[in-house]
Image (cartoon, rainbow, N blue to C red; front, side, top):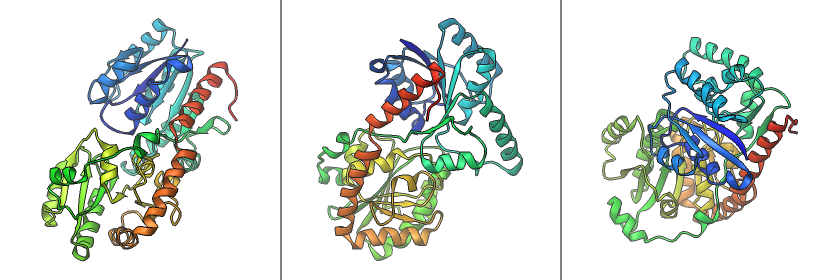
Length: 376
């Protein structure tokens, strides 16, 4: 059984930990033993413990030379065959480890390339580091075709050493769900005839909640039966609560926090909305489609790889509250079109975003990389 070490900066709720857990559950049947190096700072850590061959609990942020050395010792002691880093912070550990462990293979997945959060100087430094580290990387994985284009533009990847492996879900987990709608509406304090607009996303700036709230404030004036349910938690919760208060939306918006019943909530939603400024490959849009929930999403990297405007959903410009409101209004006014988008979306997931496709491609990359074979 080949040994792999996963490295991630955090075990807090998000796309990266979810992806890792998804792979851990199936690793043994593909002939791999996967250990996980990640700090014990989130909900996913105990779940990783259940499925990983071993946990390496290390503080990785801010960058630590001591942690790098401990990872090096772990790799030598356990004869690891391949390191797979998830996200830019983890990639700052995995590639230098190749210098300390000659012959080891390194795979790196970006999970979204976010330069917008940096000032010009930090952006220049980060890009320079990534361009150097690409020469220490055996294979790159981008989670969407749009992300691959961005990585190539920035010269973060090597030609002929990069694959696109989209996130995937088990469609049946979302298509066969039934709910007691009245019970959910009562729980969230919504009227029985409410039209529920839902968003499942971490409460942070890149997810565009401020724009969504502004758009919803305008929408609800024309469609007062609408209610907004925000599912998720994060560092911007207080700021979002203040924004809801300022817009006078206390009775119209519910912050549900982190939930384990997302498949059921997607069935509750009449409409799913993503106002993200940028994505890698959003699990939530894939899940919404798997549940046949119509989608309005911003036309950004990641979102546009899942939603095709006029085919399986509505795409609107990013950071434009008026256009976002128009998109939501168009969905409300045309339920027949929304039903067709829901059917098309579910078929889209079954063809291109299933868990089976993800796992087959990923373990194929591991096999070829360990053998030193080129992946076409």
